[in-house]
Image 1 (cartoon, rainbow over the protein chains, first blue to last red):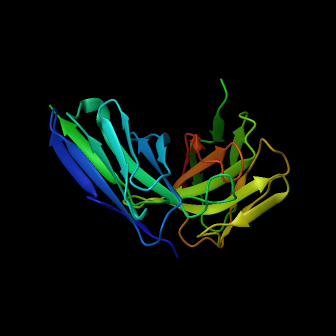
Image 2: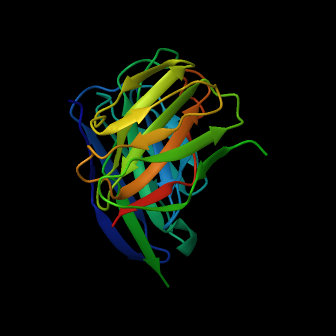
Amino acid sequence: GQQVMQIPQYQHVQEGEDFTTYCNSSTTLSNIQWYKQRPGGHPVFLIQLVKSGEVKKQKRLTFQFGEAKKNSSLHITATQTTDVGTYFCAGSRRPTGTASKLTFGTGTRLQVTL
Amino acid sequence: DGGITQSPKYLFRKEGQNVTLSCEQNLNHDAMYWYRQDPGQGLRLIYYSQIVNDFQKGDIAEGYSVSREKKESFPLTVTSAQKNPTAFYLCASSLRPGSTERGYTFGSGTRLTVV
């Protein structure tokens, strides 16, 4: 079945440093989503990418969808302690608007210290 | 405010017992999902429902059962056949089947422990 892997599994940075997590799918995706889960919390939707090579920004967060639509990345510039949590990518093989289910990646846990 | 309510937050079960986890949403979403989360792993799909009175197995449905008698409700039963039920269970919903523009909305989860 479809597999979605993320690296690294865990990263510890000092506040102000940059952070990147990478997401790789075994199959071509129709779209990819990113979620953030704070410690003890539940996943919260951040963004969706649909087009090949698409780049989207949300303040200090930059999301990219690969040209082959099999990989994606999330980059955080100048991390803050509020960025602590686990970041998941989730991919779907079917176009939006058709019945589909998301396959979640393994997650990258980010720890930020002062 | 609209959202998804999961109850209880913590649940303890003896081996051999069935237990039902509640999930209710007032978002008027058509599709609902159950995921299981284990430490160090991502979310794995147990069951999903695109419409009332219809549901499909996900990747790890063995030992679980669901029902969708009302649009707002999608309870999950963890049966005694589930070999390793201790986990964090998350319920989610989306506006329409396949509608992903706004992502999934998740409940706050139920942490199940078998004792």
